[in-house]
Length: 136
Image (cartoon, rainbow, N blue to C red; front, side, top):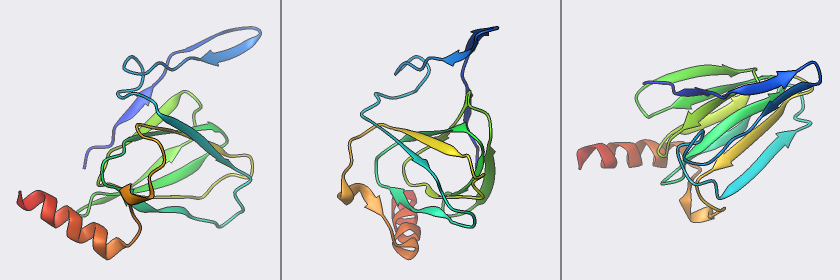
């Protein structure tokens, strides 16, 4: 499994840093939804799902966390701890976010608006979907 991370260009001086993100320039898709997680309690794992068509970029804009990516055949744990680095998560990719620092803020840029029908929340259903997709 290839892990794709985007390193965004920080702009700054003695006043601080700024990172600007533009769809199709810095982000490989049209951004239709942005959300973020914070105040995640110690020991909590989030995610536990995949998407049928949605693509995402995960950016830990403050603090840090880890992301387990699972394509149905291989699993990788990816640390996110730089506010100028984004992790690309494709469709048909199971994800679990964990090991959040107490100050972590995880922002997600999504290619589609929220649609419950796009979620795969059962791991066995996810595995079957991966097998069915790869047979065609």
